[in-house]
Length: 261
Ligand SMILES: [Zn+2]
Image (cartoon, rainbow, N blue to C red; front, side, top):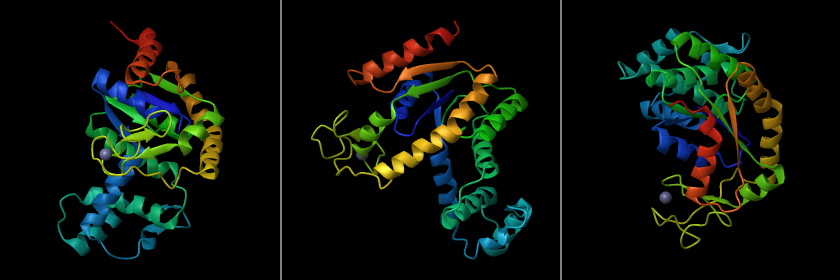
């Protein structure tokens, strides 16, 4: 399944429902990037990453060249391929450049293969029409498919309110909201008992930039999936009463027409 919606629409609680109800594994592009970058950082590889990027052709030098350089410096590392993928992700992180579809697709496909292309709920992917086409081709190629898109709908102004009030636990990653989903004492994580923080990305200007990107890229990405015949179930991101049970119920009602058996 794919969960889509504007950044801040309320995707995570719906993803939690799908994970719990269907035993799916959440596959988030953000986490994939962090994981490979982590593998790269832990490897201890040193040096200028620019030399692995062919600016003229706007692509990386061949994988075996990068892996060769990694082995030359680090010897026989356990997972040179993960380090190589992490190097690529790190390159874009460092340069502050927009990550091209080809690199996002590569990291996604690598991770997707680990679960034999099944049993995932995709989060943050596909995010462009190119990524949607890549996903459809990859699924067709591997004999699997996207069963459903769950679209979490929410109005821009509500999202701005929702996002600016968002607080997270930097230890366990649990997300709260000062108004809609406060922690028990309103300050600390219920699980870790450490102060909740506001992400640096959760400013109005950054939220509006992400909304613009959603209209520009994610909406056409969804259209590609819809045109390919994948059912789209819509759920409201804003509920009159926001409890785990209310979220679960709204998700299950929305997707029930598409469930088999
Ligand atoms: Zn926590």
